[in-house]
Amino acid sequence: MRARSEKQMRQSSSEQTTDILAFEHADLGYGRRTVLADLNLVLNRGDFLGIVGPNGTGKTTVLKAMLGILKPLSGQLRRDSGARFGYVPQRQFIDEVYPLTVMDVALMGRYPLLSIFGRASRRDKDFVIECLRHVGIVDLAGRAYRELSGGQKQRTLIARALAGEPQVLILDEPTNDMDIGSEHAIMELLKHLHDKDGITIVMVSHLLNIVANYAKKLALIDGGLRMVGKTEDVMSAKNLSDIYEASVIVAVCGGKTVALVGGQDA
Amino acid sequence: MLNVFSDPFMRTALTASLIVGAVCAYLGVYVVLRRIVFVGAALAQVSSAGVAIAILTGKDPSLMSLLMTLGGVAAFSVKSRDKRTTQESLIGVGYAVASALAVLFVAKSAQGEAHMLDVLSGNILTVTSQQVWWMAAIAFAAIALQTLFHKQFVYSAFDPETAQASGVRAGVWDLLFFLILGVVISVSIKLAGTLLVFAFLVVPGVTGLLLSQRLGRICAIAIAASAIATVAGLYASVRMDLPSGPAIVACSFIILLAAWVVSRFR
Image (tube, rainbow over all chains, first blue to last red):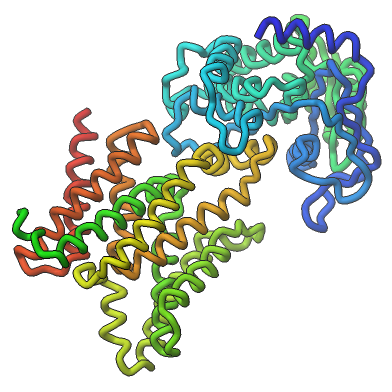
């Protein structure tokens, strides 16, 4: 895991300007219904991109297009064919009735690397154990997935994504329904994966205050891409008030940026 | 007990029941986990409707039953995007219409009623050795496919979106699962009847899930439970002059109750 991380870091610094994917005037949607129109967005190696916006405005649709599950209705999506993507879905979409252990779930991340008839080898299993260790839950490998806490489940899903040796990690609402302690721990883990392991990160969240303090780049979505840029540039009271159609103030509190709705300007 | 199974026709009946029980119990674990128990019931009814149509029109019952079941598979495996209805309601409609069709077609057929009763409650005691060989081949193929592609089937059902993002085509694997299930149901019903087949698809699987948290063990327990119920049920049916199918179902239920008691005290 460490050797791979260092290699990835070297790669990420030498290829900082290379696109991993780019939407060019892409319309995204389902059937004949366009959810997001005329999207122009570039993801570079080494990015930590936060996609935020009100609920139901197309954030998850962008992720699905990035992953190749959803083809643009029109326009273009260019993807670096060599880049490997890891996906961490929303926990509640996973069917917990299955009696699977943490190890069973994390091992699914190796499946794309196996042949259609292939079985996980000793090496695959050792690698998955390393991934579990990396996210801090190796001691839970034999536990039933459905009996874990929200934070432990999220770590399992991140370990599963890491098991596919991705260059890009895409996460959909990774801190949903978590207490603030677990939320902080998951975000610190993502920071570590980005800063130390050189993994490009894209995360969707409706929790603006979480994303703003970790993502280096922010895309504000509201039926289309309203704004994209460095987080500190995008996080202005005016931009957020326009997007959320409410009076938003942005303040710095204890070194963290916070956006508040309906407050008095500081 | 051995005296009961000394007649060749009883040994054939026992072998046929054990095979039907094993394959249905094995697939039944996944039927229960996928929450598609009533797909089993509906497909069994659709298969019976096929037999009824064949009786009326003088066509081959096996072929007609298989064709109708495959039609049912195609209809029930499609995940509707129409938010006004659910997949469950479609299965309910299929069940009701297929049951009604079977009765209507039999009502218009001169010799159909007696034949149809066999199809519904099953008459495992009249099975021929040729049918047993045929069933054994189908059961072997179904279990082999399910085992060979276990990782794809489980990944597709557990987390279809991530499976899709990893290149595992969840829709295709779901359809293959339903096809295997459809063929097994269609062939099993000819031997054991709708009641016994439906019971084998649900009761042993639930028994396994009560007693273990590991998929492999759950399947082994389900198969063992179906085998014990088969031997005990056939023995009871001869000794007490009871219909064989319902006697096996009753024994299955007693085993399930015992498993529930054991699971409560563990």
